[in-house]
Length: 294
Length: 205
Image (cartoon, rainbow over all chains, first blue to last red; front, side, top):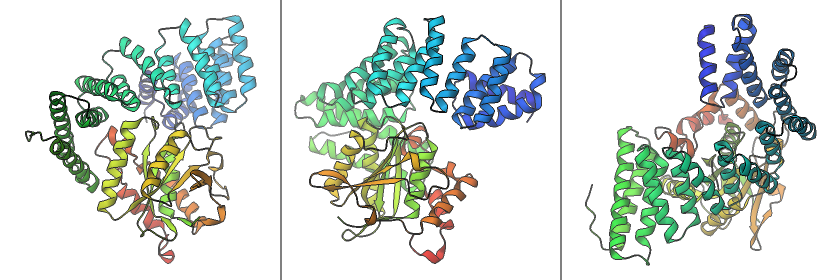
């Protein structure tokens, strides 16, 4: 592969924050071995990118050589120190890694990267409650850190603390109103919490996610399921029932259409579309509502 | 309780699923194409999720879809498997117990299978699995001697062959299907490749 193409690929993966570590190692290793001298100043950021990918693939040999090059060029850098810490983490030498991060923080208490690595160590060690506590403290200081809010929502979801996960997602939706994934995840959390109010909220957020991206299948299925549940609830008025049956029917038809449009012919897909249409008619029949065949 | 037999196909796909997402917890359903009663023969599995295992909507959706597919293909859901993101922790999570409970409601010799990440290295002589069964209203460790993995050596070699040929990338789980609905979560292509590798002399593996 031409070196320019390789360099561009690495840049693209860097900018989009992909974690395709095996590919990065493949391309990066070749680029470094064959063309290091011709890369100019780009080489340093490539060393960093390849090193992290190498750690992900248990390639300590490659990670070590990248680290040596970076240490040589930037002997007092905190950024390089953090990479050394990540290598220790990959080797599960958590105490040594923590010492390194603590020394960075002594020098520079505002170093967010070192703080976040310490929290990652807690997570790797399975110390979820401590990780949650530290992350909350971190966010009190650095309230705009999107990555941290998302990490916290994941931790809460794993701990089944859905109310707090919802709060984190609300923060994310406020600062990223066009992100369909956050809306859809919020819908999933609300659905999981259950109860009529949460199901109606879930439906609204699934609908919002679809408005932002009408190909989000999870949102489409989520809309169908939450609307069906609301329609089936004994606590709702006839009007609400009727509306939700319509929403569910619409979602079902969109799902069928999506599968047909992609011309998927496998058995499992036929059964998806069939299963859903069947379920929609069942919901409608149970509540004596005529649904217009869309 | 009873004996459980795990086929090469089911084992290979579970292993591939866990390997495809080493940083995530993954889960899936265990299926049987044999009639109920007697030993439980796990003949296949469906890989489900690698994100947000404990959120309800997609799990419910997947369970419904697999149920419908099973009734069309004369299979039954007989168990659940999970591999935790943290390789050193192979204990069942509350979410695993919940789903296993649901399966137990329909199948009274259902099994819960946890994949032991620490044993998933090449050359390991022991299957990286821990199985639980329902006993006295809770999930208890199953006696290792009641778990059968026929042709263990061959199964290992088949898994290695899948990795060296790059076919392990063919595996599709339900999550990946939702990201791209042209992908087949029943893994017909991969199933065919694995059955090809299974030596005909073994019959049903």
